[in-house]
Length: 196
Image (cartoon, rainbow, N blue to C red; front, side, top):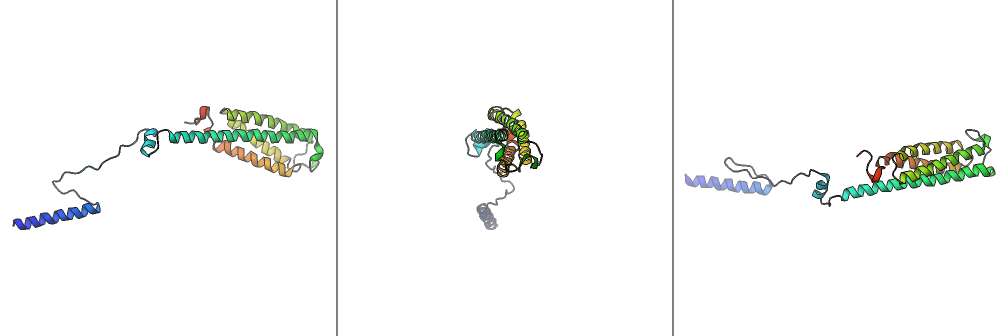
């Protein structure tokens, strides 16, 4: 009878070894459960980055640099748009002979002198707002979006005078609106997210 018991025990031991090799060990009655080694859960963002193999703060620094890049891009684009609007405005005030159609053939008929002053006013506001965005002024985001929308509408209304120039400016206005609207939440003091 003892031989039979030894054979059963050796078969049981062999079965456990096979299951262990497959990774499917089961706890037998009377055996102590072996605890699986655990990895402590990260509690703070720095610990989570460290647990992922990145040094603490590396992800935060990359995010801050991306926000600063969008901030600089949007501000610079508004300044460039202001320069383009100023060129259009000065041309409208000083030399109306370069336009393709007469002022009465525009979508919103008005003389080029009036349109020139509208573009000059928008240009000044765009340049000031662009500088404010680079300086991380939170109010500048909303003003910039509004000015780009006004600039796009003004360029659309004078599309007949300078078709290619107006289309380029409308494209830049849309790009600036995108930068300010989609990434604008990142414009805050010292590069911090406004909502964070």
